[in-house]
Length: 150
Image 1 (tube, rainbow, N blue to C red):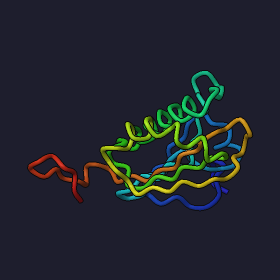
Image 2: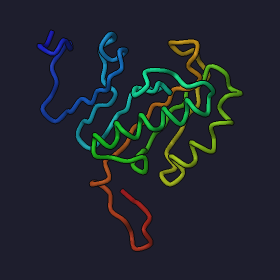
Image 3: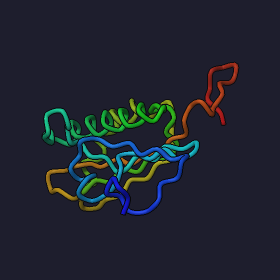
């Protein structure tokens, strides 16, 4: 076990990004990992770390999850526009559609590949979990019309 309490070896081209989530410490994972050109953001719920609570309602939780993801991406040198893959996990499929406007606002410009899964979450109060993969924008170039391409 490493001095920081994590098992295994961490390569020099890898950066772990953590928050104040107790789950990260207890389970042994990072909010995000930067590896080479990519940023992998763990499944993120609507837990508000500033208030240390979970907002009521799926839309409020979705918006908070997106804010949590955006902070992790910023720390990794990326933005929501750099997201290339997203997975949504909801315990109740009826909760997904009310989130569409917030999801479109967050990811519409990037139009990432996406999957929605119906499955139970760790805490029964949690209504949505979002996981993303991004490619840092420094590796992309804008074409003359301003459309991102790889």
